[in-house]
Amino acid sequence: MALCALGVGAMVAPRPSARGYGLPSSDPTALTFIRAMGARDLVLGLIVGALAKPESRPGLSATIAATTLVAAADFSLVAQSETPEARTALKVHGAGIAGLLVLWAILRSGR
Image 1 (spheres, rainbow, N blue to C red):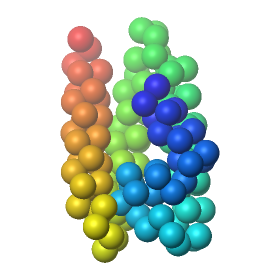
Image 2 (image 1 turned 135 degrees about the vertical axis):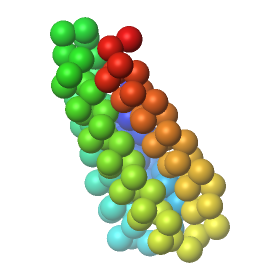
Image 3 (image 1 turned 180 degrees about the vertical axis):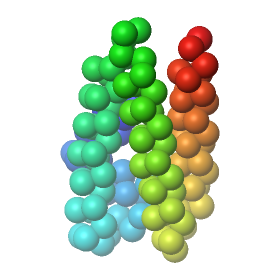
Image 4 (image 1 turned 90 degrees about the vertical axis):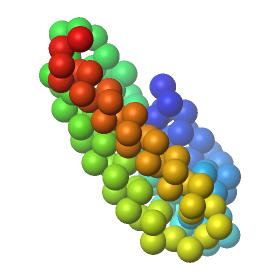
């Protein structure tokens, strides 16, 4: 649900979302990028939701692993930003990566 909420928020309100992602909110190109990231996050959230049932555990595990790679790519992109918001955003992105890795490990363990 969090991915869906982030996605819709980025598509509907890209300026505040840009600040959250650590990207410049005054750059039209960055705002287009934020909307694209929002669409991506919405789709990932819908896929995770569709796979959130016991019989779909292997697919869910693979999707969470892929989503972790997406979060790592976001972290890498934000790390290149020189906005004041980037430092805070890097912490948020890093926490998201850690959370996804924990979820992936839980899914892989079979618990």
